[in-house]
Image (cartoon, rainbow over all chains, first blue to last red; front, side, top):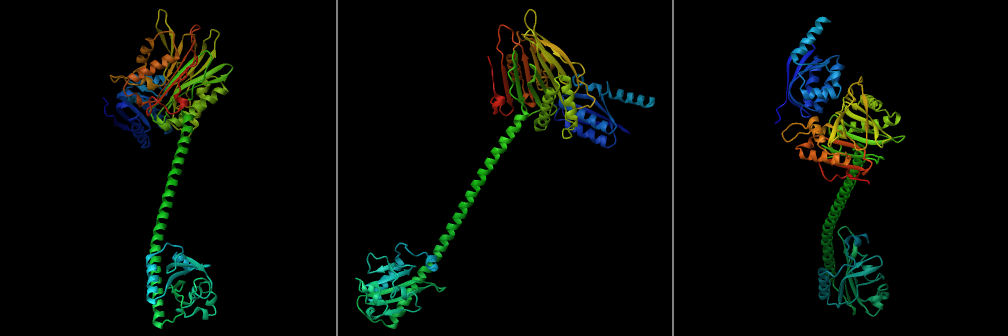
Length: 122
Length: 467
């Protein structure tokens, strides 16, 4: 019943990187996600957009990875934006109050567009 | 004398080889008595004696053996009565009446004198030089026998020493093994003591309240990321908390320990649930070793109310809602989620805010706190139990609410689910008994993945119900 978990980086642009996750974002997947994100941050892509559209399940370990990534991005003067949050994770973000810290968009495209418009207005 | 000792010949049982030498000497010299003696410090011991029954040793009186052993060549005394020294020897002057004595010293290859080969007669007589040489040869035979025996002794001693060394080695190994076992036991005792600081304690008896809990860890060491506690904060008030450190096993347990002690300490300084969570947030962010570790927690304060119930102030730090259960009109149970809006994850954000709400826990009502090990447990069809599954389950229960029965039934529900050993689970239930039926008490069930029904630690494994 468990789909293989995948991490892709379909897009990078300067400080920006999109990291797309698919499968079950649980304790087995969390360390790899964290490691990949930290690699991107270390490589100068500190503004991360995490595309969660392919995530079928996310538990507290997945949440923990997101917090860790958020902290590291912030330390590197970057940011973490979430895109296409599944329902269940959305409730988890609400319960933990993380939604106040993590900007969220319905899709990766929307997140990129919002970022683009931010950049043009700034 | 050292040589005599080295050959280890004194007081040994009769030995055929020396007896044959003595018998041969007696026959060759046609004398009634022939002996092989070993000269000791204070005696002359007969290794072999032909014609001397029942004598095993004599004194070192001068004149005969004692003198002969000191000479390099063969001693011949044709008539002892004519010899100025031998004449007073007890063998001569005594009942034996020895008149003739001849002896050859037994001298080892390295020059040590061990004893003599002797021929004795009660009549005076002469022997030829050839006979004297024969006696010397016989002494040499004895010497060779002794040398052979010595080398055999060496082999035997070496073997004995080897055995002793082996035995000592075995003994040392056994001691080392025993020491290792003692060390292992000491380490286990130490670990178990440490573990007691990590696993939740036994619940206290709170007047007017029924408490029950359940604690199961995913790790067989019975340490995990879930935690709970109930303790007095003075003035008849009690504090309780339940939470979940992100992660599992020993790593999570270290944060669990820090969390528990911080919350307890904070509650003693200021019994305000929101302040306690704020203190924990600060502590977790300060702890460098903890780093990015964080937790979710519910912290509550119990204030006895006039109706026999309690006023509950409940602060939330990113934790799923507690459920307030109250008897519904017309039977059944009303289930209300109790979660203050805006309570954030503890230990992740310096700016985190926490919020609390107040509810009244009246007699007949209960409160259930749990970690996500319960709501994230999968049902047989692969879906998570989730909030809806839990609230449906709770709503189907009867009133009044009893903490003990609530925990028992929730554990029974968990037991029907497959694969629940994946995560830690902690449950804490509080209920206020109705005025008529008052079985106030504590129920604790604890299970680790390794020992689901028989936990080793009595402080966790107890099941207490106090009337």
